[in-house]
Length: 136
Length: 136
Length: 136
Length: 136
Image (cartoon, rainbow over all chains, first blue to last red; front, side, top):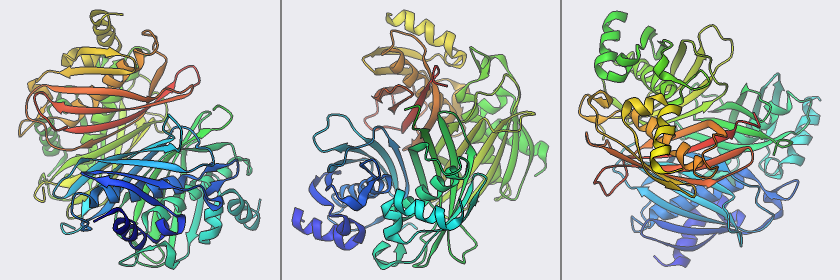
């Protein structure tokens, strides 16, 4: 599945991702990089990207990282997600780099680093578990 | 601050809350109950409310519970949020019941139980820490 | 299984629990209350109970709460545990109150409130997921 | 502070670390590697290292990683710790690799990868927040 096909996949699978304009920049071998463009309705007063937008971005990024291991078959659902906010991101695009740490039969696990575009330091860090849907 | 004023406050403070139609049903003394109406663009294929929508609802619910302790002064930001999905909610409205467990000088902490409207069992459970903005 | 039998069970199943003197005060219907007595080697300098001791206590408490639902059959393993420290406990005994929030076929989930004996406010809060061993 | 001095520091600061025989293998610049030797009383029946022992090891490892940034001054306490168990470790020594992701004025944050000695894959992953004691 090429990037364009994955992009379509993501927007169909997670309508919010389409509404927010999330783009898949790259994916493969349990890794994925996604981009959330700056949008006024995703900001909080004070001009930082809102927490729920960052959580949504991270969730979609891990989904794409997992899809990269199953040739695009959707075999799992988020079981848990924990985000720690490290610095308020400025009102710019945000990049998410997802990495599958363990792919298991019933549970998979990974982390996502979130970074304002152009920033050296992360703005948030996420860990997340996914449950196999067939085992549910 | 009455419910209507808090409602306005929430929609100004978190534009996503307004866009999603989140309502404040009650709040006071470190507790808050909010409602996310069913909306097509918050669903995932399969007809369950998407994870990011539940996370956003929980985040706003804890914010309101904290505002209930400060006469509406906004003195903290989400430092971390952890959600565990317990059952996929049906495509109905979702209720969030937030409770402040500890109000601290630099960190506050609480939990949010999420439940599909009319359901006996929770669909997700959240814990979340908030950092005082003045101490940042 | 009466309290004495459960006590033996816990000390055999978790040797650390025995070494630390953890007692089962009550359990049943997805709930359990355990007690960690004050012990010098579980303290940190400054006279507070060390974090790993609180985590261990919480882990055992949830295990007992789960055993109360299976007539003592050990059918799951800790999949994840998250602890938030709310106040340093004094150098006294600590009580743990565990509660199963969801008992699932492959994953169960619950919370544990930790409190210094005699204190009104909790010293730590734990959430934890357990995976069914037979589904692994 | 050389490795021997740090080793003494750790055993004085966390008596459990001494009792369990935890060794500091290396540390510096926000990183630390520690080793928990195999010990019968840290096992669970079935021959895997018990969860509380892994949590304790991870907690101490992050403490050393933080001490490496402050010339050994102890300026923070664990605020939260979340562990995900990925595979039961065999009854061998366990290595912990800690990394500070953010060093903040009031909150620091990092992750710890736990691995059975000689294993390619991690047995557990930890994220943890630390609060500055002077800000408390």
